[in-house]
Image 1 (cartoon, rainbow, N blue to C red):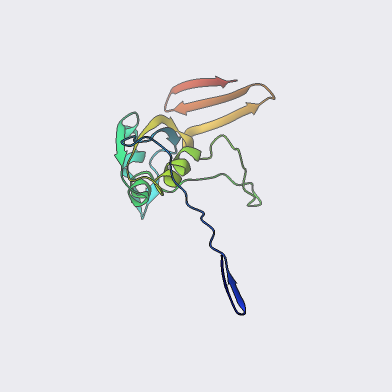
Image 2: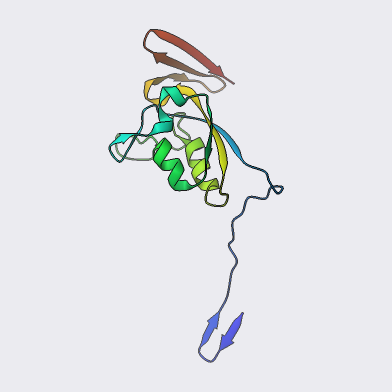
Length: 142
């Protein structure tokens, strides 16, 4: 703390860092909407062709350019729906981590949040129906 006549200055360290061993590169497995737009064109890594591939990302700009911005669901009134199953938390986590590291590996699961319908949510069971063309897949999570 620095004290001068008429003023007081306090320095608070609010540093953020990822505490990992030297040479460790983070890995994120995530799902997003497919064919997301970035600056009027489809974000390259959000396509079906790149689903399931191990991709290296080196900056927040690289991430957003190739995957698009994270999307979070809102109610009809515009209220954020925190904890919604289709919110892109994986993409947001990658964006946040790239603020402190300079390299990350990501695999985007072949699940299209645009084509996913939430059927029902019960206290202990969650059911999703994923549909793509004529294929259907039900996922049950505990």
